[in-house]
Image (tube, rainbow, N blue to C red; front, side, top):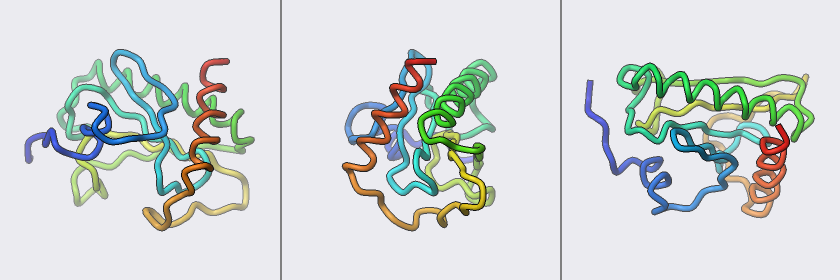
Length: 142
């Protein structure tokens, strides 16, 4: 398996070299909105540890990412009036992974509304800023 590349886009976001619409951060995880969302509130949850994917992350860091993913999913239901949540996680190119830093997709869903195709359209910055604010508030409220 290829090694972790510290110059991947998510590593740059974690280091503050690239902007994002952050919704959550603690000592081991970071979550921000996908700029090409498949549905409103589409969030990415990452470990801060340099892990390429599920094949090389430590069990403790993976467990923490799962806990944060659950917290984001619960808040997204409230913030976006979602009827359900789609959780996705891809590993290596053959598994659908595009950015090689482990990340979990949390996609709020409404009944009868299909997800947009992956990477199909960038959302407007003002829309993402409002969604990030709403989701961060729902996370803080617990």
